[in-house]
Amino acid sequence: MIKYHKKQLSNGLTVIINEDFSTPMASVNILYNVGSKHENPDKIGFAHLFEHLMFEGSKNVPSFDEALQMAGGENNAFTTQDITNYYCTLPAQNIETALWIESDRMFALDINEEKLNVQKNVVIEEFKQRYLNKPYGDVWLLIHPLVYKVHPYQWDTIGKDISHIERATLQDVQSFYQKFYTPSNAILCISGNIKAEDGFKLVEKWYGDIPSMEKPMTIIPNEPEQTEKRILEVKRNVPNDVVYYCYRMCGKKDLKKFYTTALLQDILSYGESSRLYQSLVKDKKICLSASAIITDTIDDGIFVIKGKLALDKSIKDFEKAINEEIDKILNGDINEKELQRIKNTVETSNTIQEMIVSAKSFSLSYYTLLGDTDLINKEKEIIDSITLNDLQNVAKELFTEKNCSVLYYLRNEVK
Image 1 (spheres, rainbow, N blue to C red):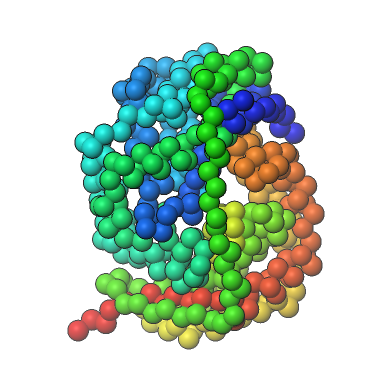
Image 2: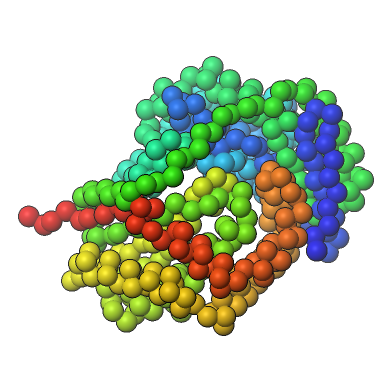
């Protein structure tokens, strides 16, 4: 059981503190409720760009990394389609340093034309290296708009193309900052060797005077139910054909259904004992690799089955084998022993994560965003409650032809 204390400052900042006296460390996690799904369709990629800009220094902290390193800390950040998250881990006695620098860049980020141009170039180069000039790099740039026609998940976190970032102005990013980087749009969590009372006092000291701003409202359109199979075929200079079966699935708003779908993914794909590896790679040798992944999103996500084909095998070989594996699941082929094995694996991983202060501080922040901080303590109960019948019901809803979008990512023929 992870215990925590929670309160909200007068300016709207939600604060959570988890006392953990088993460690000399502490983690400060600040989650902003802004991801790529909140972006203006005419200014895509700003959430990710802004993550970069947040490390460019603030009014009182010209060098964010230097200040934190002097306190013995380390930090990182990430942007998803739903959120932007920043976290610092440092010795607990120096926690005030993390609160000082994080509060200063929430209130007084120092952005100018020079810094903006530097980070625009960094993001543009990242886009080219990771998405355009890398084999299979543009896969998600193709999958997202294939599956989503209305919802802003249709674009990747980094954007659709580099043109929006190239055109970004100083006024654009300042407006983005003023709208989303406010106390009412943030959740701050401290996990580590600190008393809750002391933690709340420090947070009030460093964040209490930041002016309250109206919580930003973004209307996110619901993606209509898919009614027919979609197919996209592309050819690239890659060594092997890869097929991606993409199925619309629930998001984390329905946590039990999400975890049920995640268990299906693990049954198909977790390790070399998984069904896809044993069947498609080891036994039939149709694929060099085969896996299933799910997108970890708040709104409806994607369940992807991926197969990288051996050169002497055809797409028909792959599809026949994949359909056989799906049919087994639809016909109730999973047994209690297999389900329990996967549950044990997931719960072991979760238990390990609970011992890491940075993981706890993020999870407490994220579940608070979902609407129930105590979900961190309900995970095991939810997973334990999932039955074979639950798995089969979700599989029947998931694995239908009309719910499937297929990307054929094929190699150019050698001339």
